[in-house]
Structure formats: structure tokens, C-alpha cells
Length: 392
Ligand SMILES: Cc1cc2nc3c(=O)[nH]c(=O)nc-3n(C[C@H](O)[C@H](O)[C@H](O)COP(=O)(O)OP(=O)(O)OC[C@H]3O[C@@H](n4cnc5c(N)ncnc54)[C@H](O)[C@@H]3O)c2cc1C
Image (cartoon, rainbow, N blue to C red; front, top):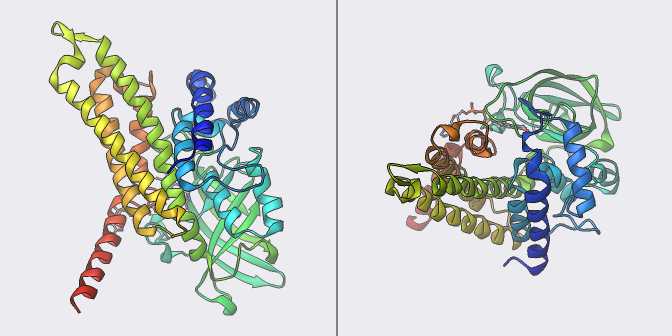
């Protein structure tokens, strides 16, 4: 159950986003590769003043429960700039969670604190270029390597789709160990950015543009990292990725659900005001039914998220539940976005409202944090295992 404190925070966030953030949606500092950092910092200044910066992490460093976080992040998501203003966007929010769970005191002070205060952005370096056979849907294909050299690890490899790398100050880099002590295991490192050994080759032109810095292709060339900047233990990198995985999937769902709620409001307003064939669009069954289906689907997404958050709140890793929730929410939000566009006719495909942006963003969401098919494939394996166990 979501608590009273979560309702109070979510209400403040919603008022802040609707009144102070939405007017910035037409700001020219928002480009093809996301909003400029200058704009992000201006919005964070406003969030700080309104007392809603990093609202899911409390003064003592503890986090709201997953159920509470879902409610608060949904309110930040009412504008794509709301998540940035409130400092709860991807990948920072997931990175903050990971560091809070696995980082030692030194890592927390040096790398987590500037993220929580909203001064710095971070990037998570896992995926590699598909054209070179690197890690994508299958992270075990990781080609980036790390080896020990005295009291440093040396990392070499290529990365792709690294959100926010351009402009980030903190990097979490994943590599496969070729050191005999942990051979084959994955390692995670904390690095200060920029670093001359981490070269941004290009920022990709992608369908989405709500994340600052866009998504970069990167070459890592003899990056030397002091041993005490390894997160946790050598060879345990995939275990830590699991810690980040389910909550990060779920927070993505909550943020995009927030934006879908707003898109439905905009489409409803259009359909109730706009006339065709002698009556408001909403009175034509074709349009009214689209809005009705959206209402049903928005509610279903909320319930799916709350169910999964409840599982995570028991301390369970929630791997299966978050797979199910992520798949359902990403696919359903895409249909909701499509219907909002359709209800609004030509206006729906213009940049005059955030409806068109939602459509583009949730298209990408069906791929990152695990493509729909990968989630279904892994669920099918589990179903088969359960059947075998029940029948053996
Ligand atoms: C907008 C965006 C932001 C991203 N940000 C980051 C980031 O910050 N850091 C990072 O490390 N990565 C990031 N990624 C990368 C993302 O995690 C990968 O794109 C994703 O894991 C899929 O990998 P791939 O693109 O190599 O697709 P592939 O592995 O080439 O898969 C292609 C398609 O094959 C199908 N497929 C694959 N496996 C199976 C299966 N077992 N069964 C059925 N079908 C299957 C799926 O339909 C899949 O979409 C981002 C991606 C996007 C689009």
C-alpha cells in the first residue's frame, strides 16, 4: 500500500510539474539529443526551491519503498522534463539505487552524493555495438575486457547506446575479467567522467530525445581504474546488474505511465472540443472507444506496477514479476500513445503537444531494459521448467 507520506510528496511533485515544468516543454534548449544541461540545471534549481528535488530519497539517504517510489515517479513523469527536474530520470535513478545498495562508504561519498544532490549526471556502460558482435539482449556476449595491472584495472572495449554519456560526470562501466583471479566474470567500475581513455565516437540519431546527452557509441582505450573503484567484488558484476534491473525496469514504467496519463488528458481535451460531422469527436463511437480503452489500460498499467512494487518491497528480487510488468506496461503504453495520436488527427503527429513525443519514447521503451521478446522468451523457459517440475 502506498503511504500517506508518498501521497504528500506525489501531490507536491504533481503541482510543481504541472505549474512550473510544463511551460519549459517548448524551450529551445531541448534538441535532438535531449534537453541541454543548462536547461536541466535551471529546472533542478526550481525543484530545489519547491522541495521536490530527488524526492524518492530521504534526508538520511534511505529510499522510499518501491510502492511509494512508483507513485512519486508517476507524478514526475507528467512531463518528460519533470523527471529531469526532479532528478529521477534514467539512468541516474537506477544508478543511484545500485550505488546505495552495493557501494561502500567511500563510493557513496564520492560518486553517489553528487548524483543525489542533482549536481552530476551518470551513465551506465553495458551494451556494445551489434555490428561487432558485442553484448545486447544477451549480456554474456560482453567483449569489453578488464585485467589487473598492479593496483589498477585496465579496461578496453567498445560500448553503444550509452545514455547520457555526453555530459555525465559519473560512469558505471561493465567489463569481462581476463584476469586469472576472476576470469570470465563480469566486473563493475565507478569512473569519473570525462576521461581521455573513454572516447565518445558519436551520439546516435534515435527516435527518442528526452534524455540529456542522447545515446553514445564509445571506445574505451586502456582505461586505468584504481582497484578501490570497483563496485563490490570482481566477477560479481552480473549479480549487481540484477540488483539494479528490476527496480530500474519498474521506475521506467512509472515515469512513462505518468506521461501517458497526461497524453490521455490532452487527447480527451482535443476530442471534447473538436467538432466533426456536427458533434464533438468524443461523441463519435470510434473516438470515444479509443479514450475508453485508454482509461482501462492506464488503470491496468498502474495495477501491474503496484503489484510488482509490492513484490520488490518484500525483499524479493522480482525478476519474473518485473519482466511481466515491464512487458505489459511498455506494450500497453505504446497502444495508448498510438490511440492518443489517432484521436488528435494531424495535430497528434506534430510537436505541438507531448503526445507525439510519448509515441516516440515508448517505441524505444519496448526495446531497452530488455526487449519484449526477450522477456517473453525467458518467461516461456520458466513456464516450461515449472511444467517439467510439476510432471516429473
Ligand atoms: C533508447 C535506448 C537507450 C539505451 N540506453 C542504454 C544505456 O544507457 N546503457 C546500456 O548499456 N544500454 C543501453 N541501451 C541498449 C539496450 O539495453 C539494448 O538495445 C537492448 O538490450 C537490446 O540489445 P540490442 O539492441 O543489441 O538488440 P539485439 O540483441 O540485437 O536484439 C534484437 C532483437 O532481437 C530479438 N531477440 C533477442 N533475443 C531474443 C530472444 N531470446 N527471443 C526472441 N527474440 C529475441 C528482440 O526482438 C530484439 O529487439 C539503450 C537502448 C535504447 C534503444
